[in-house]
Length: 234
Image (tube, rainbow, N blue to C red; front, side, top):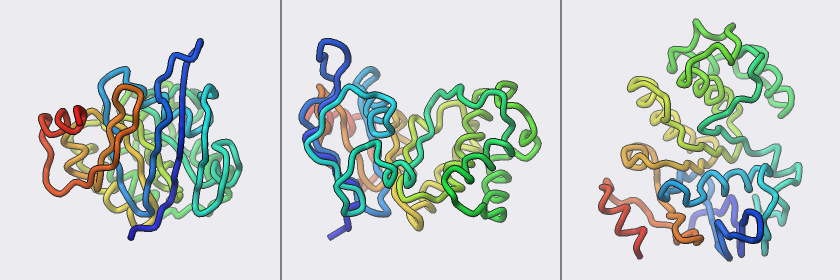
């Protein structure tokens, strides 16, 4: 049986007046697992991610277990072992990549592996942009700016929100490669609406539909859009 990295039980998330986005749901992620979070636009995928990382505060929780320890989402022992890359992120606009990278690695108190960072920079064809302010980068290069640092930390839990948005074909292929390689370091929860992303990099998929996080489905063969729709209706 796979060892559990993270388990959330009886999770409910809402906006004002308790309009539920997620209600009384469970999520379980194994160690060294790549899991896709799928749902229609507006289903609440980003809100779920925002809740996990402490941005969205309107939620209730039965129990949260991370690495065999009962925690809250805002506990330091969880926060220092996870990082998220969002689909759109305008933070650190006036920092260049080198400044941002040094700050994040110092914040997490993790030694910088220059060889691995160089591998990521070159894989994303990002070297000529490392001294640009983030605000001056294209959408795709802003995404690379964040992805390189997040992958470079090699934390136990990495969260990716629609990670292929804005990336060119070559960078998308490299992203799929490093997602699969990441299983040597930890687990990834990846929200996506791209079937290719699931087929190319994920072990399993969960559907967020009608306020419920569905059961985990192992990916045995390549999925089609109709397969995803079928799982959604189950």
